[in-house]
Length: 96
Image (cartoon, rainbow, N blue to C red; front, side):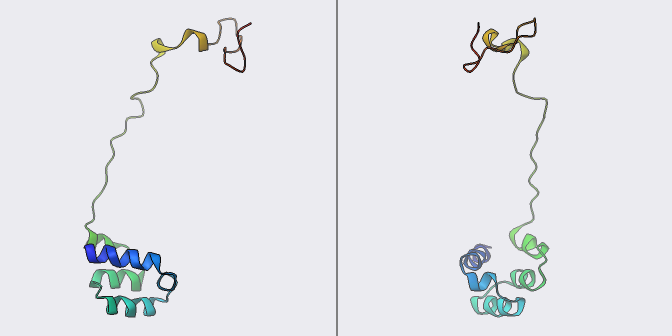
């Protein structure tokens, strides 16, 4: 796998490889000793071959949109609009 990553980095750094035709890239990968999955991915444009080579792992992020944030009881009294509808006191809009 590390060889595959190194070859992908080489392709990324080399403009002629990045813009090479699939046939030219395939020849270059053969010369570099690339694994079959990398050569297949380059030839077909199918990323699933790279996923197989690098280990297809799903990254799951647990996110609760209702968690965190400001607690209404923690509001700063100076930065809360007055009950009569006046604007908030801010540095640009100081209290009268």
